[in-house]
Amino acid sequence: MRQITITCNGNNAVADSYNAGYQSEHNATMVMFNIPDDLLRTGYTYTAVIELPNGTAVNVDLDDFKLPLTKSLTAHSGILKIQLTVADNDRFINRLWFD
Image (cartoon, rainbow, N blue to C red; front, side, top):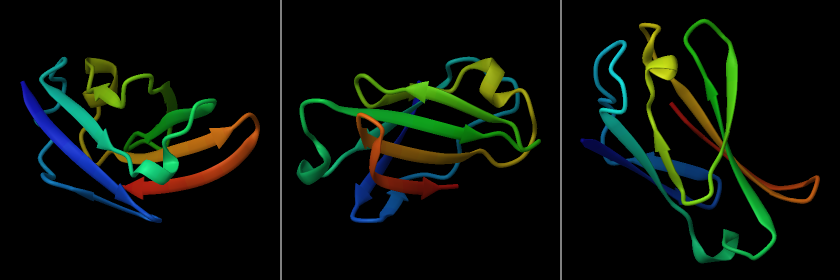
């Protein structure tokens, strides 16, 4: 399985690879998020918002900071955009974009 690690730092996010694989692959790539200590708190929620190439957004809760790229996410050709949202109840703490 391919692995892409996205390192989050402040308001920036940098990936160690930009090749997520081929269209319609299923669980061939795992996206891992490296979160800085100041954003790791009990009670915070972590959500990946994936924008598909057709503009549709998909929300995925991240319990362990891992995001498998399933066939439903890779079905369209083009670039996936990922936003990591860190929230405390309904209050946003940080939003990090990666595409």
